[in-house]
Length: 618
Image (cartoon, rainbow, N blue to C red; front, side, top):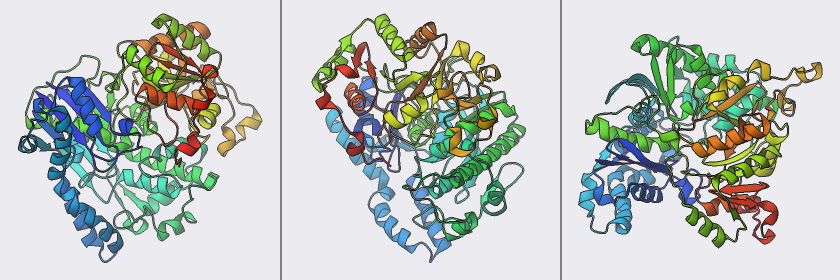
């Protein structure tokens, strides 16, 4: 049985394909169209998934969509009626789009699928496609994406995001192929939207800048946490909460916060062009602290209520790896598994799994100690001959080596301090680069973080980088003993690897903390001694595992800086041509694509790309 899952029309559209319950392929549309957070119907991702499965739409038994448009429309109408006459401008802008497209999404999906069918199987008729459509609720999709690929036979499932149809936070209980949704917190009370409100207020983009708030938080102090508790959120002992809507504008307005919010926190929102100050750092620290407290209270009460020792997490808030680390170390649950594509893109996979296990009642097979995500390497891969043809067409100068020679060359380059673009195997599904489409650097370098941020990624200097570490050595370098294959857990650097600070360094605060080395691996050690860990496993990524082993042989260190292969404003690269283009638009010194090795110094300077002109960088 083949089930195709689709998420679309809001942000981060994606497609996923199951064959007899196993994940065959999954990818975000943005990777193909090169449009960040692309919300359009994922036609390219669908075509890729079908090709990866060796099938056409005629072979697909069911097509599952990740939410229910009529329920979402009901929420929209009820919200406007509740707040009327406020929000008429927003209502007037939203209604034509809903009436034209979103309310009649079944018809729109059929039309888009017909276009795909024309290319893959022109004999498929529209009535056949419409008969295959299934619709899951948004949080049901998130929960399914978390539980069914997890390694657990049974588990509590917590999903937290901005909003689906009505739910913003939900609890489910999974057992075998059954997933029962038990309770929900409804819009407008949303932890995700609270975090997004502070993202907006501190001058970053909602739905993409939340990572920046998490990275900025350790530079500040939670000085505004009490203001948040006293005015914005009524938090109960069991973790349930309500938000005071007097301070927000997201229900009916065109912004996240309002004048009352401004008055509470002492001024208007920061504009994106303004310098980030200590105030923004303290605001970030405050909302991060509140988010962690909500998640801790929720997970403790869920353990008491369900009795389960296992917890699965999904939804956009589950990408808050700092809070995830706090939940793990809190110990309420013995085992935690987090969906690596926890945002709306993962809803495509969750919809497919809901269709297969929920609607069709098909059995579930566990994957032993491993999960069902295959390391999240679910996107396109390219043969060596395809790589070489793409590079030649792009005008690249390269040499093709054996794999052993390629790994030795890359390890030596990294040990010498070079930044290396690393393009191997299948592309990752989800927002993290995990050694398939990565930019790598030496974690021991005290200047690597700043260099990568300002000369390669073209982003704010305060943004931290993650360490990729050999799974067998993680406990030697970090206060973490378990797996963290998806870069979704933050833990502290081991005490014995930290550097003792002098008195002057201890007295620094705010952004001045940035350039002080804090451990033997300063490029991946944040200012609070934390690190967002990716454990690298031979079973899921043997090539990357070999590179880390070779780097350890060169340096004695089993850790590399790993950041996504893109610049700010651009999606992660998908094809060899994308990789070469990014290589020529940054100060990366070496590019490794398959077994092809490219040195920047050998490339035609006329092919250099100015990314700052090519992209409208936020």
